[in-house]
Length: 412
View 1: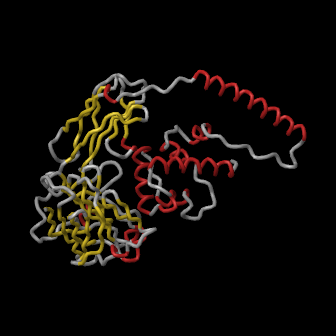
View 2: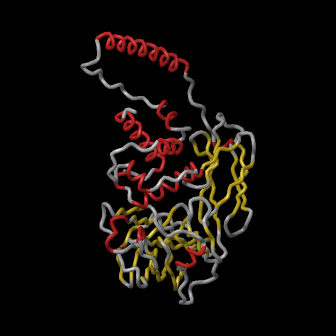
View 3: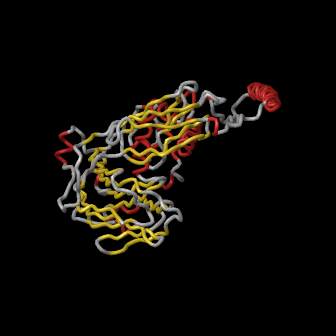
C-alpha cells in the first residue's frame, strides 16, 4: 500500500466529512465534536468508531500507522460510498514523478500512455459539454409534504409523512427528519407515504428533498407529558418514568445506581443524561421570558472529569445552549445564544467554569432586546437578540454522567 497515496485519499475523505457535518474548521473541534461525529457515523453505518480512532485520523492524537481497512470502509460509507475501494476509484491522484532509477523505455511508455489518456479524456469531455443538457428546473409548487403524529405526546413517536414527489425529474427523493443530513432517508418517488420514528422529544423541521434541493419543509413538535428522564444512546435511548413538576424545591435526577441498573456502563465513554420537558409551556417567546433553575453534576470520574453540563432552551428554528463545566475545561465549551455562537477555543468563557459539586443557580432571560445569563445571582454575560422573536418549544438539562435539578421555573 502506498502510504503517500492513501494519506491523500484520507485527507480528501476528511474534507468530505467536514463538509457534511458543517461544524467549521476541524482544527477547532473539541472532544464533544468527535463524540458527536462518532454517534453520527454509527447512526449512518451501524459501525462504532471510537473517539480516539477519530482523533487519530484528524491528527489530534499522534499515530504513525494508517487506519485499518475496516475503519476506512466505515468512513467511506459515511460519505456515501460502498467501501473504501469505491471511494478511491472516484478520486483522482496526480501520479508521482518517475524516479531517476526508472528506465528510459519505461518512461517513454509512461508518456505514451499519459498522452493517449489525455487525448481520450479530452474527447470525452468535449462530447460531455457539447451534449450536456441544462439541469432541470425544480418548482417547489409541484410538490406536497405534510405529516401527522401517531401520539399526541410522548416518545418514541411514529410520524406518518404524506408527500407527492411524482413531478421529480430524479429518483433521488428524500425525507429528512430535521436539520441533520444523517436523518435523511430515500423514499419512493411514485409512492405517497413514509413513516419515521422520533426517539427524542423536541422541535424539528422536517424536509422533502429532491436531488439536492429542499422543496418543502414544515415544523414538527414532539412533546413530552411532563419531565422525561432519558439516557442518550446512539440509536434508541433509555427512558425512565416521567415526573409532573420540578418546582417544589425537591431535587430530581437519576442516580448512578439507576444508570447501572439499566446495564449502562459509565466508563470508558460516559453517557449523557437528559431531563426534557417539551411542549408544555404555553406561548412563550424569546423576546420576553425568564428561565431559572438550580443544577448540580453528580458524577466526576474517568472521562467525565470535566463534568460537562448544559441548560437548553429549544426554540422554533433555534436554540439557547448554556454549557457549564469545572474551571479547568472551559476551553471545550460552546455557548449558543440563538444566532450567535461563542467558542471557548477563541473566546474567554471562563465565567462558565463553576463548582458543580454544589448547587449552581442559573438564570437566562430575554428582555429589552438582550439575552442575559446570571450565575449564583450575578450577571455573567449579555448578548443582543435576533430582531425576530422565536417561539419557545421547551427546555431540557443535560449532564455527562448524571446530575440533579430543582426549582425549575419558566415564564415571562
